[in-house]
Length: 196
Ligand SMILES: [Zn+2]
Image: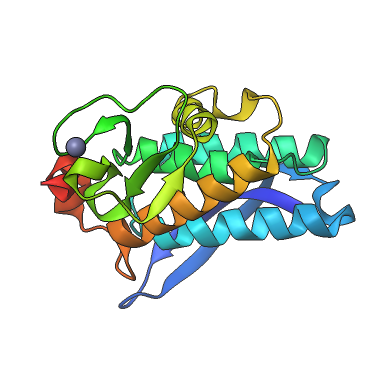
């Protein structure tokens, strides 16, 4: 059974902590009934382990994760749900890619046409400025821009193309921002520095 558990840890020697108490906070009995929901929940936890700094409170990320688990418990994994979740978490960390205009010359991307996304520059880069490595359709950019907002989980189902493009763009963006390293406290307190 999937559950959120309140645990009380007492600091021990080095990285080891002692479990002082544990109690169940809420249960998600339906997640373990379906392989796709188990996989989605597991992928979400793995993503959080990768991007969140250790041993620092992250109440907004926690609330967002609870929202994901509630959705997964209520119904099957909707198209775009996981990539929306990852996008929202990145936005909460201060890492929202710029999908409206070119990050170099600030030219607005054509509303109806695909545009190049450069994960290393954190946004769109127009052809004249060199382009990017991921071509993202206008509708996918719109989906992602909605996913950065608090209403990330309330979007209508994504098309498979939107989900596929967004997954590639966000995965490469996460790799570029995080790599294999977790953000240091200094970077977390000043997320903008990563774009300079
Ligand atoms: Zn440009």
